[in-house]
Length: 271
Image (cartoon, helix red, strand yellow):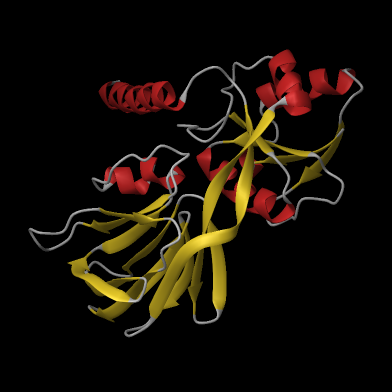
């Protein structure tokens, strides 16, 4: 079985990664091909195995969607909400998931502006490029929905509802839902609330003032936006295939990861 291995650059010498790959190699079942950031999934690969944290998974997921190759992740980073396994996984568990794990799909969103198109697993954000608020208008399926003067506007998938949108006060959506969350960041108003729209809706965010703005896709700056420029967002034509592994359900994982993250940060501050 041909496996593409993608690793965050700072973790290529991590002892957990080295031990797992050595143990898997001894089985004689897997043929590993190593890819770096920006590399497409090689033809003929049946799985992608990623080592890193959530940023690594976001990077890998879009490439896996384009190639239609299932993704399996081992968390060697911080939160690891998108990875299926933590660093304590055994080689046997990893081998079983790679060989026979069920594939589930997660929605991606397509974001278009000024002729360019970007895919995101978590979210896109139209944000101020400075410390000043940015003024935007929101349209859903071509109809005016709201206007914001805020630090930015997030459009998140169900997967991304537990990321930046959650920190900005948005709702948690179960990953199997077909919906999008639109959420203003620190709006200068008393009425603004997160909005949940259908996954097949077309969401448009138009910059109408407040200085320079920026488009951020899955945490990475993608484009600068001028006044009167618009960003359109809708369900992408491709979805991200993930290998279903582990016995913890979504809600248990949500509580475990979020509570542990808060406790860990508190412990670091208090040391």
